[in-house]
Image 1 (cartoon, rainbow over the protein chains, first blue to last red):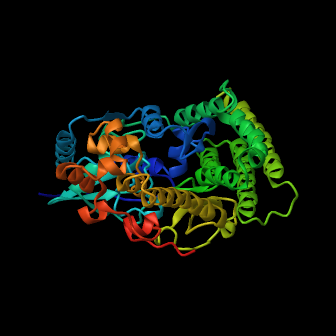
Image 2: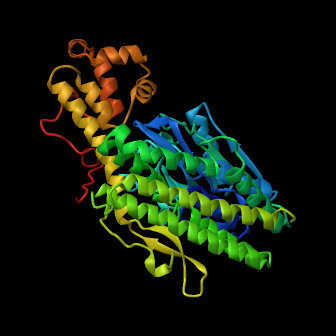
Image 3: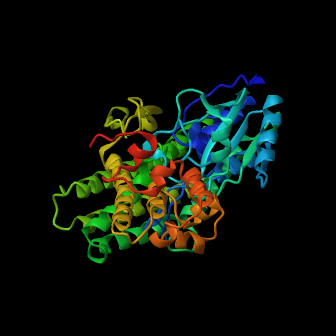
Length: 337
Length: 148
């Protein structure tokens, strides 16, 4: 069996954005990564000291995996099919049938056994997204937005990563586009995406989510060295920096990606106010990078000040203030729309 | 962040892969810039990799001290925990915990040992003892060496 779909693969910062953008392009909808990210309300903040992984509190700059694809397709009126499997054999058979029909298929996979992935990123992380775009004998052609080119993966390895074990098992999850509308209202999709993000960041009544989460993190950071000791405090801080910068946030915990979305939206909607918000969001991103630089100095024991953790805590409070103003301004602009 | 400010700190941590960053060009327009790394980000990732190596080394010492069996060590080496090991072997957790005991491990049947070797992807000779020297997970599992 040889079947290779003619697929235009493009890299992206983040896997779910990239998979969504690449799938939409196949069906003739050309949207940039920032547009996908913004319409899918991909920006978020979450700091949960009560849930730990490897003994370190969970921090996230994005919502749960799968939401971006779901929101983008529903906001553009695109019909999709998403399914999970109990039977591993059936999961592979159904995939093959779709590929034979020339349908590119998105899949959620674990990265520990993803053979072509950079080894340093091969943790037991089960929410990576890839697209199968063909099959030749026992090898699959894989479009992975983190990779430059289409990669090959044998069926045994693909089965393993589709049924990876551990937290958030993908259970063979696959998804594909069934139907694309002839016309869609991009402006309304953009506004829905922005409103959702403003709501997420400004109004969730929970001290660990959105801007309140940044506040809580700032308060906790200050206490880390005394409470945890120098070594563990560094690990806690390192985890925040990792989530902020690693595997495709596009820099500064998705803030630059969001600024790019605001800028592109301002052109599409012919609304110069949005461009101003984009500039404010860029400044927010720059502050996150500043926080990263300060953390880097702490890691290397080269922080110039007396109380480094107090100072990074102040940086975070400042970020929170600036981000709050930015989202409030954005909210004002889009509310009447 | 301006395009020319995007960090290009390359320690070959990502095996040649560059990640896309978003930054503004000279006209203030957002554009994609590829980056092989940034120092604070690289340190944070190396810290996380070090935690894994430290847990592996701690497990190795416990095996050498005859407090634990090699199953315990290989669980950490393969970045597993009890839940993953349970799902992979289909042995109940309390059984696996018993297999952590050297005395129980030494009497395990061939088929049980085979289960572990196949789940860990190692040979029987490897399973019966732990390496003599401390190991780095990336090097052992994926043949990848970090330059520090």
